[in-house]
Structure formats: C-alpha cells, structure tokens
Length: 580
Image (tube, rainbow, N blue to C red):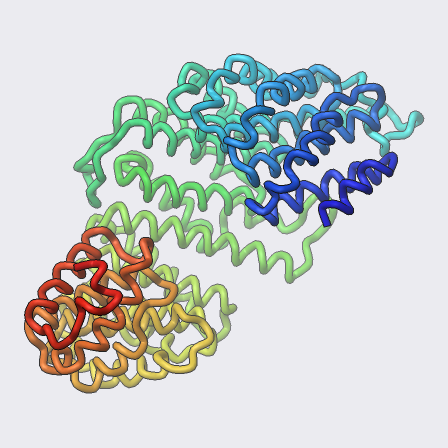
C-alpha cells in the first residue's frame, strides 16, 4: 500500500496530494514499527512538502505534511527521526509566520508530537516555541491578525456582511487558541522541569482561557490546567499519600501554590459551564488527578466538589438545564447519551473521592450512596445500571470497615445485580459483593451458601473474561473474610479451573493472597492438587505485568519451598526451574 501511496503522491495534483499525505499519516499510525522500511522514502517527500509556500493550496498541503510528520515520528521513534528534527523544527517555526491558520495549528501539533517522542531532548526548542504559544493564547478576537487569511476561508463569499466575516475570523482565532492551549499542556507533560521557567505565565493564560466563550477552548484549557497539576506533582517526588482527612501527607509547596490558583478557577468554571461534554472531560481529569495527588489536592474544596456532583445526580447542573445547542434542540437519543456520559463521569469522581478519603468518606457516602442506588432499577439504561454497581463497589472497597452501616442496603442490591442481563453489570456486581464481604464488620457468612450459588454461573460460559475474573476475586475475598464458612473442597476446584486471571489483573493479588495462605496452612485440597497450582504459577510468572513485584517474589519463595518439600513434583525439571 505504501508504494502505491508514494506513487500517487508523486503523480497527483491539488487536493488529491493532501488526501494522499494524510493517508500516509494514517498508515504510519496503524503500522507503528513496521513503517520503518518506508521511512527514508517517505521523509524525502515530506521534507520537500514542508518547504512549500507559494500559494494557499501549497500552504494547506504543507500543513497536512506537518501534521503527518507527527504520526511518522511516533511510528519510527526518536533514534530514527532525530537526524531530521532540527531542520523540520526550523521549517515548522517558519510556518508560524506564513499567515495561515491551519499551518500554524499543524505546527503546534508537530511541536506537541515531537515533545512526546523526544522528551527532555526537546527542551532546547522551548525558548523559541513557547512565546508563540502564549501569543496565540493572547490573541484578541476583536482585533484579529487574520485579515490576510481571507483566501483560505472558502466558505466566506466576498459579499457576505461584516458581521458574518467577523464570526469566521473569531472562530479561526478560537481554533488557534484551542490548539495552543492543548499544546502547552502536552509540551509541559513531556519536557517536565525544562518547562518550569514558562509555567507561571502559561498557567495565567490557561486560567483566562478557561472562561472563553468557545467550549473547545474551555475544554482544552481545563485539561491543560489538570496536566500542569499532574506534572508539578510528579516533579515534586512526593511520598505516597495516605487516605483520609485531614491529609497526612501535604502537597509540596510548589504544587500547593499551583493548586491554590488552578483549582478555584476549575471549580468556578465547572459551576458556570453550559456544555455537558466539557463537564464530562473536567470530571474525567479531576478523577485522574485526585487519585494521583491524594486528599491534600481536594481537601480545601471537597464541599464545593460534592455540591457540583449532587447537582449532576439531581440533573440540576447548569449544563443540564440547557436542552438545545446552537443548531437547535438535541434529539432524545443524543440527549440521553450525553446525560449517561455525564452521570458516569460524575460517579467516577465520587469513586476518586472515596479512594483518597477512605473512612473519611463517611459523610459523603450518606449523600452519594442514595443517589447511586437509584440508578440500579429495571427502568434505567444498561450504562446507568453498570455505573451504579461499579461506583458502589468502588466505594465499598475504599471505605474499608466504614462501609458496614450500608451492608443491609447494598448486599441484596449486589446479589440481585449478579443475575443482571448485562455482562458488565454482572462483572461489576461480582467485584462489589466481594468487596462488601471483605470489608463489612457484620457477619454475612450465613448468606454465603446463597451467594456462592449466585456466583457459580459466572464461572462458566461468560462472554467477557472479566466477569469470571471478578467472580474469582469475590470468592477469594469471601474465603479470607470467613474461611470456615466456605466449603473449600467444592469451591477450590471451580476456582482453580478458572485461573489464571485473564483480564482484571489486579484480582491476581487477591486470588494469590488466598492461595499463598492455603499453601502455608497445608490445606488438604490444595496439597493434593499441587500440579494445578503449579500450572497457574507457570502461566503467570513469565508475564511481567500480571503480578506486583512483591507478589511475584512471594510466589517464587513458595515455589522454592515446594521444590524442597516435594521433589516428586519435578519442579527442577520443568519450565518453572527458571525461577528457582
């Protein structure tokens, strides 16, 4: 295919060439390392296209080539791309001065992509690039610099009135600001400490843009502000946070100062935001950064965050009161889709709060558990039911023993969800019921026979591997919580047949914690079926990502002990000998 694309590029004109160049970028993205064999020939052509400047058509082709180079660099890696970087950076910088909005945007995309590929090596270019990005953020829509770009706006006829032309100019500037705001975040994320001299100025501009009239600009500004928080936190080399309030581990001074500036702007923007998808992205970013930075990040703002979340669950948030977009009313399906995404994103934030607050989440549990349980009804959509059980399961996990007061409310709900018609709901229910059994201080062991019967179908013929994985985790948690209430001779054969964990790899930690305990206590069924145990060990040990280092080390120690205690197992003559 690549040979054909290069032939077409060499023997076509006009818009066809731009389409072909874009197709080369798609091929590079899809083929990844396999693209290397075509790399030299492709670069000869793209470098030439990066020099075009005679007319608007050439500038547009140059823009597409600039954008395509990002995919090429990602495909071949920095070692192969390094010889071209200096020249291409000069050409991309030159493109910023050619008064073509699309070319400027693609130059920014190239800078972001190059920063991602080269990391610290990209630092020397910051001194030249960042001022341009800041300038784009500061552009005045009422005093546009795009008066020379009329030719590229093909949809604007000469006789259109001044108001319509002004709207197009403002839209072009907004697009440029959106790309610039996104690029600032991307470059800081990948260059780290080298970007710090520019951080304060960039943050101030991003805060200003977070209240821009265009939703795309607001969305990227919020995301980049969250990127600044994440990157500052990683640069601070902070110690691991501890769940709970007040925070046991404070933020580094630099992170705290940034947070004091950024978080109020984000929360103020959230309250006033009228676009649901902007709020969805904001909630997703808030979830990620909260779990990274811990309770100190949100301790001063937890009440405000909770109030914003309550409004979403009550469908009273500002973005939920606007039922139409600029082009007319949304249809019911589109509205329902956006609502589902918004509720799901809000529930993820609730889960993040539970994770960082732990038992301090109790007062917020009283608020959010009633909201979430209302979303598990037959009348609710599949996505809403899945969200509800998944979020409640996360809360049951993170609150530890503090979940106890909700046991009678949640236990029957989770059991009911185990037989839900939807795969994802059943998977979430298996995880949730295991977490509840593990953490509640109420003795629920009398319910184990019925619960094991409800879990049993999840071990056979499930469409999604994570259903059985979570069922394995549930049985392991139940057993560790009340070992004398589980008929191990009946349960262990089913459990061992389902192992190893296929998809929910974090459940390996739970399952192997149980197995290690049973081996050390010389459980009769386990000791009579050690070949099955060794089979599972043999499948997970070669996979680096399947186990935490501590669990892997413990497994190897147990393996060595079994080899000494039971030489007839012939471990030393098996593939497992590698780990002895």
